[in-house]
Figure: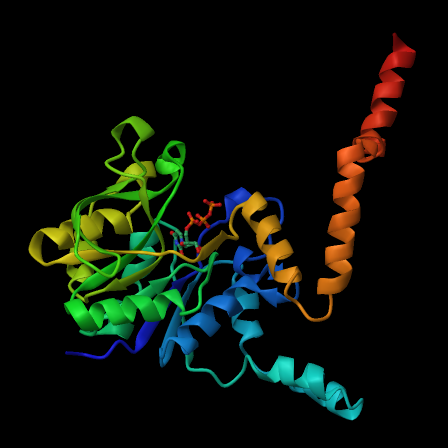
Length: 314
Ligand code: UTP
């Protein structure tokens, strides 16, 4: 059995849900407190035993490459000023086995993964979405690798979602549970309407795949939204070899979505040694103000001005 050594992080999408912030900046670089999202993903890969990471980038994604490069001027400056702790933070993102390839057009997640064909060769590998942060005692990628070691097959991470949200995800049609939270799967369906969804188990941003997926991706027609869908390729793969779904029971933060990003920031802020005490106090004070209704009355001064102007006109 081949070892899982390689990870792909697709980060070439437009990030339209986060406009205007993503007009000139990759969404994967938006920080959660003080760390870009993509650094959380790279750390999960390393903590799971991954040796080589390929990041799929596109137009405007240069800051991702720069973030994982050295910055000799900044390092020298921090060294001179004796700011050893900050220097450590800057240096910890350099010297990793990171590679970059560009996806010329964002034609879909399946197309992004296809760009990694030469990098992956004939080994099993993982795909980790650049805007999905996962938190659990054991990293989710490591859980998938353990699933692969048991089953010698692809393992796709899934999670229960509210039924009305199935049209935002790839959804599985599960057979009986095969133990350890692993399911055999009858079908993988991309973004079904809730009335057609075969279950509430949604594919989330971690996939362990066998290399045969590339042959399928090369010949795949565009699916939902006119994009080359990874879910459709996985459904094809499942017709020729076993593909398991692994139910994730930890926390998932969808940082590509505005509300998801805000929740993630608060959760991580409450754990961050520098800000957690102040943030906790701030949230407690804020909730008292919200409860008393005081905050609604002075939240948006501009809206008040507009309202006053309207009243004057009338
Ligand atoms: P998303 O659909 O969440 O990302 O794709 P998006 O298209 O950038 O975002 P919205 O929906 O417009 O807000 C999941 C991941 O796949 C990558 C994205 O960068 C994201 O990390 N992706 C998507 C690509 O690399 N290439 C693509 O063609 C599509």
